[in-house]
Image (cartoon, rainbow, N blue to C red; front, side):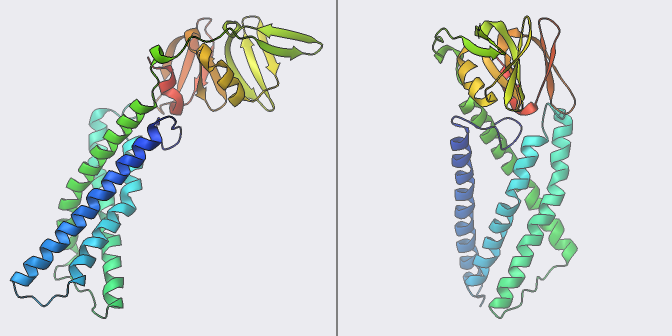
Length: 277
């Protein structure tokens, strides 16, 4: 997964599912332990607070975190190098704790009001709104950092799982592409191609002697040429890896692959990792 939730293949989706399941499981354990501890503490103090209230208070907090978890995941995937410097990344995520905490508290307090009203016992916090927000923000900032670091580790593991070792790739069988050019039929070796680009119902093949139109989908061509070192660098472009001499990345994270003859082929940050290594 590179730069977002899409673009995953191989073992990456499984890593994300396992990672998110672990986070959800930890939250459930946290809910059970905190609720049980609070019930025991209230019982020792002789409080007549019914058991459903501590369960409600803790459960609404967990639901609030689950609701804002996608926002934190997007922040982790987008607000990071190379789009931001490390210093800007840390500062941005510290600032993100404020809106995330506000959302978490808003969802949590709203659900408590609804559940308490349904149970016939209005929810009346003892502290002011300002005191509640400050108290919750101090805790939420720590929880945000913990979740953000956990999601960053999951993303790193997913990226590692999605990589295929070059040494494990078997040597490709000799292949020739049959390309019909009017009344002619051309046979091209993969080494004759430098890059290819989708063009409607065709793919435009860029060769040493000039461009040719080939009636095939880009996905089918990618599958055919993958064993020969061709990789997707954009949803509509393939390039032969050994034809690339350098890469220039712009501020948005997109890039240009510069070929040996000076041709510049635009690539998307989603596919940047295909040229690594």
